[in-house]
Amino acid sequence: MAYIFKIKLEGSSKPPIWRKVKLNENLTFLDLHLVIQGVFNWYNTHLFRFSPRGWGSTPCLQQKLDDEDNWYEEPFSKPNTWPYGELYDASKIKLKDYYKKLKQKIIYIYDFGDDWKHSIELVEITNETILTPICLAGKGAAPIEDCGGIWGYYNMVEALNNKKHPEHKDFRDWLDFKKGEKWDLNEFDLEDTQERLRVFWTLDKE
Image 1 (tube, one colour):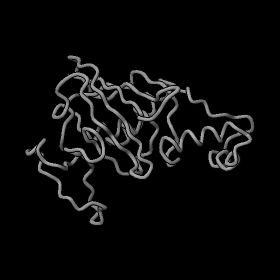
Image 2 (cartoon, rainbow, N blue to C red; image 1 turned 135 degrees about the horizontal axis):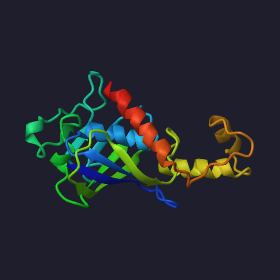
Image 3 (tube, rainbow, N blue to C red; image 1 turned 90 degrees about the vertical axis):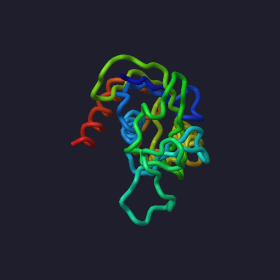
């Protein structure tokens, strides 16, 4: 079976930023994390979590790190207790363990400082067997990593495109913008996104 998800970046508008992806139902939530990183142009440099309604809701899925200095101390529940525990290793829980019906959602938060929230809705189930995740469609330019979350992103775009903005030069220097270059909120190239996902996925699985 294959699941088709619509992943929307919460708080985005004019246009809303979203991607539609198709994945094998047996992939894990860690795999889904990597897919989101690929199609939203993130760089997998921050912590993440999945939970039904975002902060404060359970069960929560995160990556189990080997580092003893993890910022959290809460122990991970064993996979066979799913979904009755509070915290689970995202690499141990499959998509089909959580998603049971169409329109069911989960919230993915990336970068706990910038707090990028993504709503992930199951929109279709097919009888296909696919080995590699696919991006089917999308809309809106992907934000820049470390720009301060969704509101920081829109402030950055305003500054980039407005010569009178006090941060205009700083942001253009940061992104190495050429003279006359502007940020296009509507920019989305499906072929480029598919290729980035393919490379991102292949490198991780090697």
